[in-house]
Image (cartoon, rainbow, N blue to C red):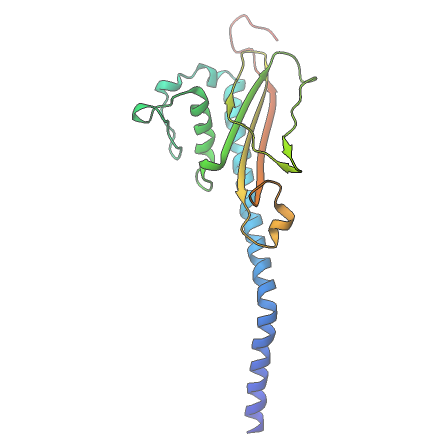
Length: 196
């Protein structure tokens, strides 16, 4: 009888010890999972932005007729009649959206494309901060022409779900972490007779 009581007492203590450790264990487990998924999503955003930045650099994006452009699978499509794109900005953002749509919602995606006639110096490329928190870029599309310097920035608002992790990762308003991808380059001389 004593042995049976001692075995039951041991089982009870293991349950109590697990009750103390379980919240910490599951918080760490979910934190590791969320961080891994978040970094994978960041790499997907970088890859999608790089592919579309190359389209601008080579002049492919500038030569595309947005109103008759085919929609890519996974994108949001256009806001025009029959799902066509209403602007080149909408078309370009949807191209990046297609690259991330397997794991991210395009509603939180912002794409900003700026062109500059000068060189790489003398321009302000900093992200906007308000109260120490980053702000998403505003959607705009100005890809420039051959030999212009172009800055392509894409930001995504990732809502941090794991409670303790938010203390370390939140850098935007609304309990969010900004995933960001930026590429600066000079457009190639893709028009005939142009030299940079």
